[in-house]
Length: 149
Image 1 (cartoon, rainbow, N blue to C red):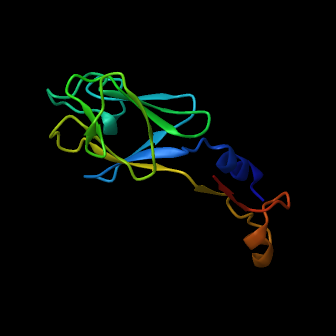
Image 2: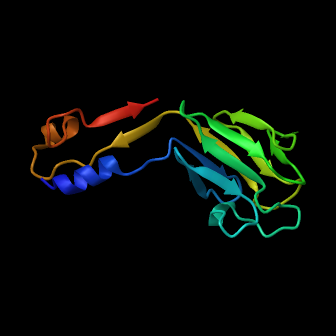
């Protein structure tokens, strides 16, 4: 049994929420204790960085609250839109699963779908266990699959 690999898989930080690019399908994870900026600045993640004059350096910020809700704050000049509605500058809004976030009016690729909610965490199956045991238990005899809400 490779318990080291199992522990690494279980302890790997996982996003409780993410943005998915509508045009490319690229995913941006939103993790706890992290402020994610989308915009032109070099420190913005690659999938959330846009070289377009209508995009501000830090166009908007996303955070994952303690209750695992996604909050967006507009800090742009040309607007951040949620489901087609423009946010006011410095306005904070909680996002829901399926919401559409767009930066600027017509920037190609700057549109994301929000995914929040349930996620499934699976541990790898132990190599030495019998097939029937592999289906229901990890190396310590605990339930193998957990659904987090």
